[in-house]
Image (cartoon, rainbow, N blue to C red; front, side):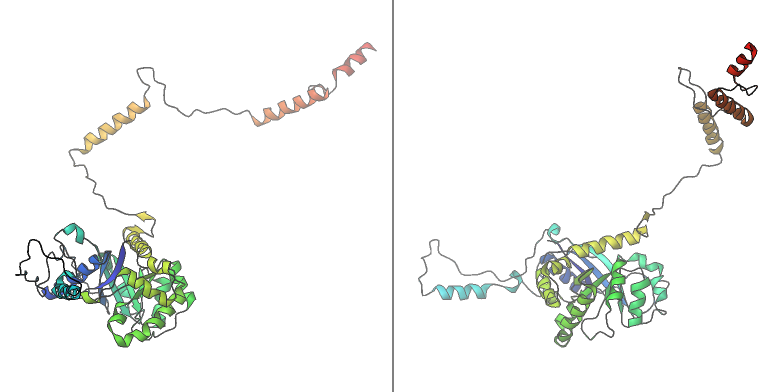
Length: 376
């Protein structure tokens, strides 16, 4: 089962060497715990400038050896006999304690030199934290959003939430679960956004790392789950250090405290996230998820090539309309069809009616009547 973490905090400016190393350790821990897709998230609070450049830099290679702070354990200098004697029952506990003390902390996290075992799909994401729809209108229409794979908004007012749910074309609506929500979540407003294909995020990282924010985690998350009914719901981490990272199964078990079923909680980390990434891809490369537009380059003919192209076009047209020399049938041509005159058609129809009744169409009397009068 492949897990998704679509919220890995990334510095708003190009990261330094220390920040890159910390980010690399977080991604390495995600790979170890079975995550196969992650999204680096940068947060903004104002509109994007005209010369905005995405600060997100993907990690081309992960750590291959143990970190510098965890040097490898020194080799043992004791020699073992070629045929050691079997230990007695009294020394069994002492062997277990010695074996436990000899395990180094770097051995608890498996490191590998194989790069294929540490591969993870990396995406880019931008999150806007705003409370005024008018001030953030330029952000929604900014052309720089095409540089990001995912677009998210964290509203801090009810007015902003209603505006985002009804009209904005984004991918994720996130909520700050570490403090009390400043508005009440209405099922009608949340359902409108879910019908438009927008997903809702529960970021558990800030509440896990801060003991004071844990009391708001369950109540806020339960309010979000009740408003959306578990539909279009994703769970992310938001981890800033490798020691904070939790596995996908642990997060799914924690989500059951919010009112989610075990299957829905697992889907919030797997299949629902996959549907979100597919929907975001269709938003980026298609128009209204119906028509894909891909630019193509067409070579225009030069002035020297233009007469030749016109001559070849005329020759192909004449060849297609002329009859073939090998007896091939001529192409179909439309011919005029003469229709009977309206007056003649009426006369013919009246004559046929009189013939059926036994009358003479010329004199209007029957032939039998004429024959009887001649005999008299």
